[in-house]
Image (cartoon, rainbow, N blue to C red; front, side, top):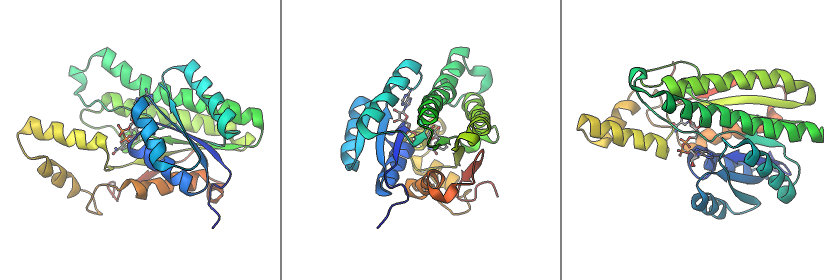
Length: 257
Ligand code: NAI
């Protein structure tokens, strides 16, 4: 059966685990060749091996502009001209603003915002050079749409990403490069499980209690399974979304209702 991304070449950052890995897996299932990039060398190799198919693991720190440009060249040398870029690598730091060091704030912005910009720019430069259009799908967050307690740095990075996304969408639409963002809600990943552990330890309660309290606030009643999120990334990269650009699509199980 024909896949929605047959013959396409994609680069996904932060692909060693979590959302990036789920997106890479979904893209391969739809027929794309996918480069998985991550700062965790061993984990990205294992992730690529686990997916199988036409995949390329790359060790990359997205805050390094030179290394990211070189990684894009490697992707094209091995897999062909780049069609889809998913700047997804990110870190979470939850801290009250008054307790946060400037260096901590800068680090979150460096990885989540500047790193995503560097990745998107490197991909867009190649897409423009090929003249055959392309797709950029950022991973923002619900915290890219509103702030919240302990979220000054993370939220600033994800709001900033929406600004980059809309600006690049305006600049690149004429070249057939569509740029959008997915804003996931509470997804079931290592990042959120760590948060549960930290909160549980802080409050002296069981991890399951913290998880249950959060799940009771989600209208669909549970954290988001990653395979349910990945479909939105497939859609935005596919021919189904040919008239969609500059948008932030929320996938949150009804959290915002
Ligand atoms: P995760 O922590 O499981 O995965 C993030 C990946 O990014 C890791 O493999 C990590 O090694 C990689 N990474 C971190 N810094 C990097 C760097 N400088 N260069 C290259 N790779 C780097 O987290 P998860 O949950 O999969 O998050 C992925 C993205 O989704 C992040 O941008 C996160 O902010 C965002 N997000 C996550 C939500 C959730 O509920 N888990 C909700 C909304 C957004």
